[in-house]
Length: 334
Image (cartoon, rainbow, N blue to C red; front, side, top):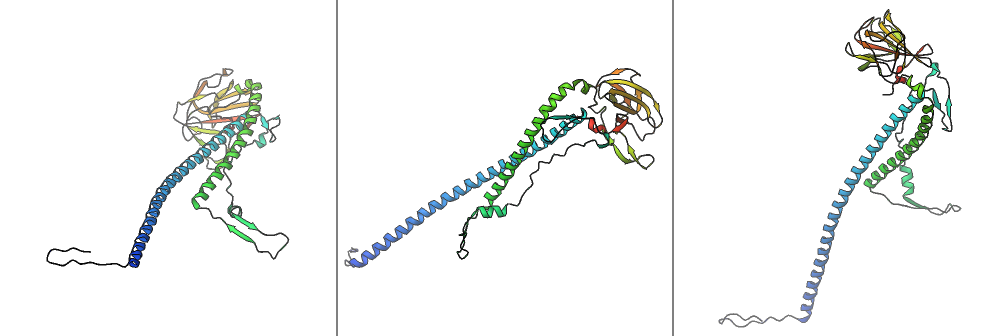
């Protein structure tokens, strides 16, 4: 009923009860739909926040996995250096541990076949496990004795990000197992090596183990093109270049057996270290020791020069075992 101003008459509108019920039902339905939409919106906003949180967690997880991978690579490199150092020690004391690691085997150094540094390769050999993953993620039911039966093959596909994380974890796990096993074996070798070195302590004092001077290596042991004759010749030592006057140190205890001037080599010094080991130093500018003088490791014996047949100031460092030149790099621990 509508009550207008004084000038108009009263108007009354009547709604049928059935129509009123329909309108009320529609309003109720709208309210319910609105409520559902509101709840869905709240859930959607919650999912968005959850997705952001999961993305951040995944980012942090990837960052930590990358950090662990780099750490494993660092351990691998340190192990390689340890292996190389251990090999040089064994070579210096004529010690060769057999592969079974059961007992040390002492033998004379074979100059015709001097072992080089063992290559340590702990890099993970990546395998293609896609087939294995697909088979592990699928459920197959096939009766063995009835070929007519159909095979139920239900595959559960993983998200790519989780597959990447799984792959990284598998690689890290594989590296960890290999490195742990290798370090365990190396620990056994080092323990036996330590026991042997305790008996060989006197010999180690007389075994060359350091680079006699500072500088950069300009020519290594082995075949090369001679810098003067331009012919392919065998270089019996190690050339270390630096300025004239750079000090030359004895790499081990020994006795000076020769100080002279030699054709091609200029001023030279020879030191006998015992155990069939002799070192030679050439192209010196000044000799600071005398024949028959005893020297110790690290003692200054000469100064670098450019005497003899030389293209510039450098030291020619030569190591001989039983009268034959061997690679000086095998007698440098640092």
